[in-house]
Length: 199
Image 1 (cartoon, rainbow, N blue to C red):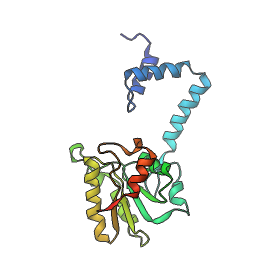
Image 2: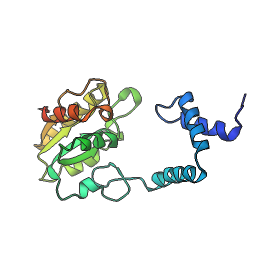
Image 3: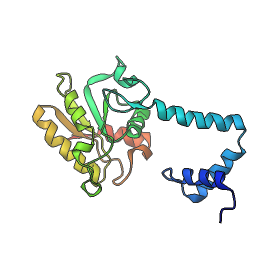
Image 4: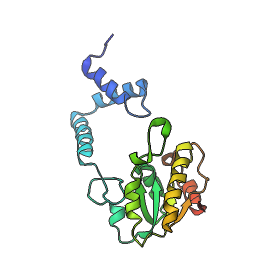
């Protein structure tokens, strides 16, 4: 039975589609939004629409940005001899919080997962290989998640990059196995970066 009316029910349904949001959380969020001052609710709606319209991928590293080239790739202070490969933009943001890493990034937008039908062709690996044609790149740090898919992706990348004469390293496993990088604290990420090993 629809006790709230179609507007509220639809809002709850849409919010419950967000990752990590169950029906109870969606209901709480919906009622919070409904009770917001109208101008705040409009600002929230506009910010969602604007973010969705403006988002694009950096033409260099493939991270989410609102410009052709992201601020990290366009920075003159970054070390362009090192590229850290991560699964998504949130992992990149997690490493940036450590303030320890000064190189560049490359975002794959996923990990190899035959069970889920994700092959290397679905990832931004071709774009990475294009970047590696530059003589400047001396090391690729593979910072995929320490789970089955992340390890499979790391091994695949190592096999195709090593023949190019580029040093391939893997972040140390101070990061918990089965965890997602975006939820790991800065100290653990820093230690994992410092303890990276050759592949």
